[in-house]
Image (tube, rainbow, N blue to C red; front, side):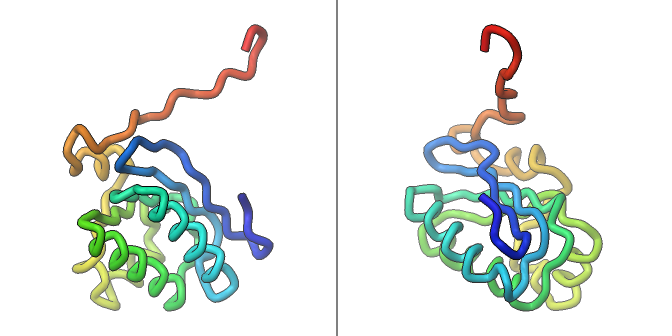
Length: 136
């Protein structure tokens, strides 16, 4: 479900307690409301753990950082956790230079992020491919 300004937020895998969501494009003022609304909707459906696959997140400024910190706060209040996976060097630089790296859990891959959760809270990973060939 793309945002008009290029932010893309896609559910990749989920189970009762956890969702793996891929964020692509730029997380800044133009996508801030879309991100907050979309992620708030996911949390409202009952996910306590959210793994954000940031491997395609090319830009994140202070407004985007506030979105991530807000999501972290929301999940913490629900006794859950936000896990960032595949964070690129530019976004990682921002997290480190603002001190946010000490607050937000960062993992090199989605697999490693999911491994930090109890087995009962992990969705199937990698997700099963959708069959599009003959007989599908």
